[in-house]
Amino acid sequence: MRTRVYVDGFNLYYGCLKGTAHRWLNVEALCTALLPQNQIDRIRYFTARISARPNDPDQPTRQQTYFRALQTLPTIELHLGHFLTHEINMPDAAAWRAGRYKAVRVVKTEEKGSDVNLATHLLMDAFDDAFDMAVIVSNDSDLKEPISLVRNRFGKGIGILNPQAKVSRALQPLAHFIRPIRVGALAQAQFPQHLRDAVGPFQKPARW
Image 1 (cartoon, rainbow, N blue to C red):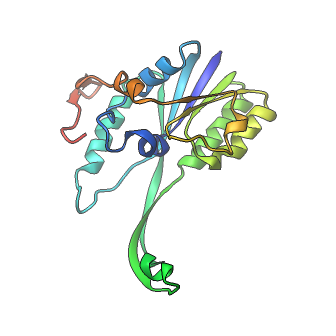
Image 2: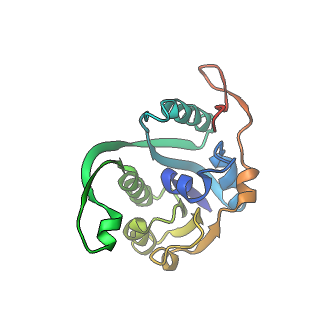
C-alpha cells in the first residue's frame, strides 16, 4: 500500500527513547522493519528546536547533529515547531494535598506547533490522495479528530506505531492496526557511529 508515516518526535522520544541507548535512531530503518509490506514514500518528522539550558548548554548542538543524521535519509522530511519558555505561578503540591494554595514561581517550557503541523499535513496529504495508508508514530489522543477524518471522510487506512506502554483509548478504535515499538526494534534501527552529508563527515555525539 502507498504509505506515509507521521512521526510525533516528542511523543516518540518520551515514550520509548529517553534515558535509553537507542536515541541515535534511524527512523526510516525502524519504519521499514515494522512495516515490511508497505511502500513508504515519505516520513514526516514533527519536532521543535530546543534551547540551551543552564545545566546542559550543548543540548541544541546534539539535537542539530541528530537532525543532520535524519536528513541523510531520502524519505525523511523535517517539520519544526518551536518552544516557549516563561515564568508562571503554579500551586505547591504539598500545600495542595493539604487543602491549601501556595504559589510557587516556576519556569514552564511548552512545545508548540508539532501537533497542529502533524494534523495539517496528515489532512492535506489525505485530501491530495498521497497515500492509501497513514501510519502515525504517536499515542497522543489530541490527534483523534484528524485521524478520524482521514479514516471516515477520506476512506484511508490508519496504522499506529505506539511508542508507549499502553494504547490511547481515544485512538484505538480508529486504527486498522496498532503495533508496539519494542526495544529490540529500536536496537536494530540505529545509525552508524560515523555519517556524511553534503557539509561533510560527522558522528554521533558523545553524550547521546
